[in-house]
Amino acid sequence: MENKKIEKKYRSIRKKYLADALAFLGFRYYKYTNEDGTSYSFEDTENLKYAIDSLMSLKSNCENRI
Image 1 (cartoon, rainbow, N blue to C red):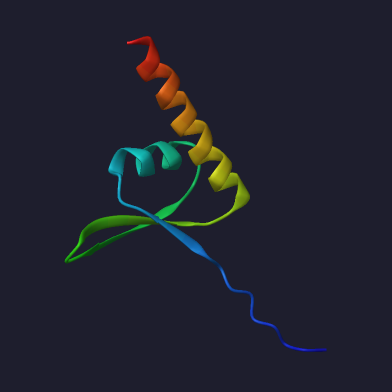
Image 2 (cartoon, rainbow, N blue to C red):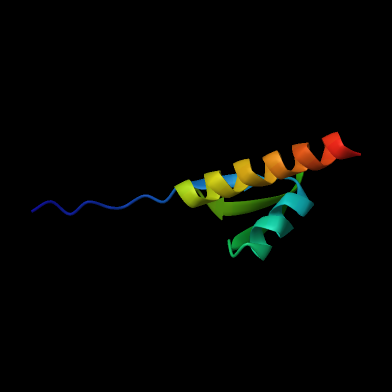
């Protein structure tokens, strides 16, 4: 049996409020600061993709009502 290393992929987000909203939903992030600014790194999963899409949809719906 081969010894396969499982690679985790990460998604980097630069928007603080989006990172905080995802953290409120239970997603853990690591904060990195470099010469480009601050970024928030999440483990890239299907649940994370669904949460980001849902938050963007909610934002769009709220903007249309204002």
